Image (cartoon, rainbow, N blue to C red; front, side, top):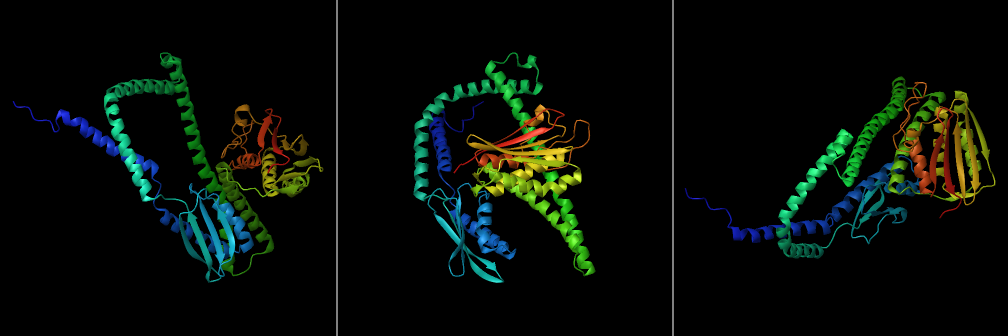
Length: 437
């Protein structure tokens, strides 16, 4: 029987393969060097988004003076790696707010009007540096094609060896993964030392992925729970007031205000934690006395402590003056004291002192304390204690407060730590520099 001819002669396979490799490499190189060319569309999207943002902010009662502070804070968390610039002008063309996070000169710009008081009130101009000239893209393609033609013969010569090596190491990696899954010494005894370390790393990575997945699911459930209750209270109160056509009494408004404050703190913690983890948490530093700030926060939480039968004691050095963001320090103290009040049995001690070049905030409670394996996880987001040593359930929470404490401390150039002896309470300490630009 006559053999069928092969689709391509043997001598034609090498040029064909080199041509394919050249095309693929050129496309890959172009993809690596070519930035997004939709800079104009990105600028249009930014201008539209932030014009609506400004309209909603002004419509909610935000003053033009406070608009820039809120714009800087929220724009800093906007997920655009290339950065952007915003300029908000009123009807006369005067700038009332601005934000910039551009590392290169702007290439694209767009402007949209925002609405306030029932009509157009100004413009929001968005600028971005995304995009690249077509000539650069063409040069990238040419460089990729030239590199492919030069590397093609070497790739063809080495392909057999590579296949053998890849097959060998794929088998070894499969053995390491099997050893990691089984966790037995017998399964790993035939591996090299490097492969045993690889097996251990794979096992640790698997555990971390499982922990992160569990934390994410828990976070979604906890946030939904924490928001559902106050929203339900607000909705019922508003519906009853509308149905009965009468204003809400002052005592009822006070309860609703507390529910709104709880939701505001939750949303603020989520936003601040995201900013801290991205390294974009903004600080408004000034000189102040941290002892006076600590005293005011202890006084603020005293009614809650008295209701639980807990005493808050304060020891502070009023001669200390520090250069820091007082509003963030108040938030840090609120989270530390709030955490201590949730777990203390009878007393909470707050101490503010200074040493050479730094000052420290120490919060001590007399709760059940923390086990050694728990101490390493306390400052992770969404982690919270479930039960105490006697089996009783711990107070509910999202697990954001201490993560925010750590983020604020690190943004100031400081540290946050915890020490505890199980059954004897816990001591949380934040160390911060006295002065840091």
